[in-house]
Length: 247
Image 1: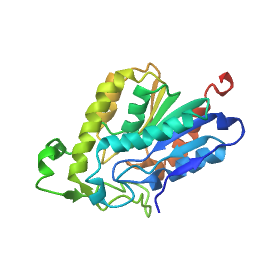
Image 2: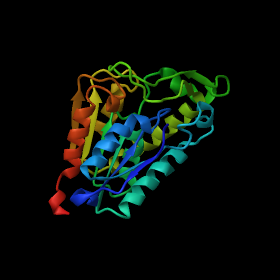
Image 3: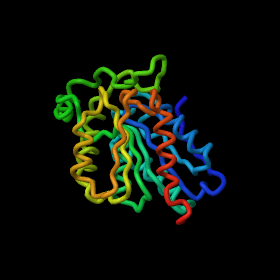
C-alpha cells in the first residue's frame, strides 16, 4: 500500500535532509527503495504521497497541480526546519516538482531521474479540450526493462490531470533560470514516457553552472525500480554527502 515516508536520520548524516517525490499517476512505491537506501545510510528523509495519488485515477482527475506542489514543498520545509542542509529529488513529474522547489527555496542540490518537463504524446497539448470529451486514456505506468515489478501506478491516465501536468511543466520551465543549486540528472537511454526534449530544456534553461547528466543504459522510465536503481542510489548518496564536513 502506498503511503508517505519519513525518517529522522542517524549519525552525522542526520544533519542532511532529502525530500523525495514520486511521479504522475504513480505512488511512493516507485521511490521506496531509494528512500529506504538513504534512510539506512543515515540521511533524514521525507517522501510524501501526493494529493490525488495512491487512491483512484478519478480522484487525480479532480486535483489541481498546485496541490501536488504544496505536498512536496511541505516535505521540503519540514526537513529544512530540522536539518542543516536539504536536497530535493524526484522521478518524472517528481523531478519537475523538485526543480520548482529548487527555484523557490535555498536547496543544497537537486537529483532527478528522467525528469518530465515536456510531453512525448502530441495529443497532450489538447488536453484542455479533450478533458471534456474523454475522461481517461491508457496508462503510462510500469515502463521498466526489469520484469515482474510494478510501481503501483493507476491503470488509466486521467485527461484533466494531464492538463494540470502541462500547466506544471510550463510554470517550472519558466522558473528553471532560478535553479542555481548543483543538479544531478539520471537519464535512461531508452525512455518510453519522457522525451529527450525534457532533458534538453533543462540544459538550455537551468541557472546552475553545476549540472551533470548520468546515462542509465539498462533501465527504462521508472529507473528507480529498474536495473540501474543501485547506481542511482549510490551516486545520489555520494552527491548528497558532498561537502558534509563543510556544514
